[in-house]
Length: 429
Image 1 (cartoon, rainbow, N blue to C red):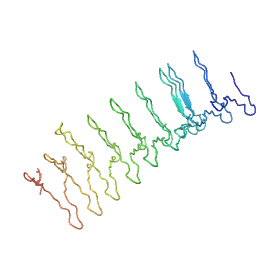
Image 2 (image 1 turned 180 degrees about the vertical axis):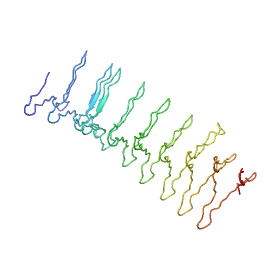
Image 3 (image 1 turned 45 degrees about the vertical axis):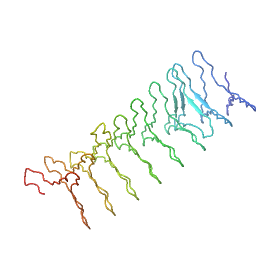
Image 4 (image 1 turned 30 degrees about the vertical axis):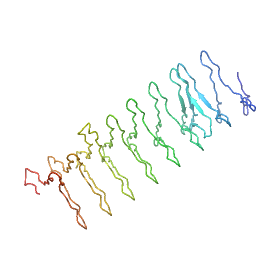
């Protein structure tokens, strides 16, 4: 059966219209069926729907649209690939047109603006025995000039109520693991690499949208790892910077930054490690920790403390964690110094430095030891200097050295001694 319009040798050829008539005051207009017959052996017939080639001009468009209505939800557009009971289900491929000289066509999949618009469903064929069909949505390759077409996945705007959501995920697996979700930017040979941006929604009246990045739960073993890192640098340049920062606030506090490990029921809590990588040239990378500056009140404090030991019933000798501040060793030049300075004030007393040992409520309190390290095979041990600063007007600071009072017992001794030597005269006091 062939149905063809008349040829127009000089102008346009005739149109071919296949349509049902308008319905009356009640009832629906007639349905249109374009279908091939069934087949008992071999493939069923194919359906081809397309426009012809244009030598001068552009090829004709293909439009599949649903008419508007005044009651109920909008009409649907359904596209489903074939189901197979023994092999892979049929694939669904949506691709834009190739631009051999410039950009390829754009692919846009989006819901319309709110107002009970109809749905669009694209599904591949089911494979009851093996893999279901793939769904491919892509723009065609660009030509010698231009770029490949844009892909837009967007819900429509809403004048009243929430705009539509976008869900992207893989299905659950009964035997096997869930499918991966990969968002990647293709490589390029000029300019900077393409960006990946994930931004939560903005609100003009309430809190902005939340951004959550969580690894998968391991109900029987370990949960998934979360890795945030920049890639290695090339032969020239530095590796990419990592910035973890809350935004600024014009009224109220800026957001807090919380970094920590989770609690454990059996076992010990996870370790936190902050390190600077090694290098082969220049000074080593520094670690700087600064508290906040205030223009009207006291500046922020910096607090570093070791963990508390509370399991004394099971471990009577359990102690709180040690706090160690040490400088790494070197093979040339003087060793690195440790400097502790309190704050300077231009109008009041400068900040104080206090070093105290821990209290022993039942036994002896902790010792405080200030000493220089032993000297090597040549040289002498380091000098200890206990001195108050000079004063241009008023008294210089005092030095107090003494032992505490004892309620039951005797006061502690004060001993100033000079060590013995094997050459020259003894040291003086």
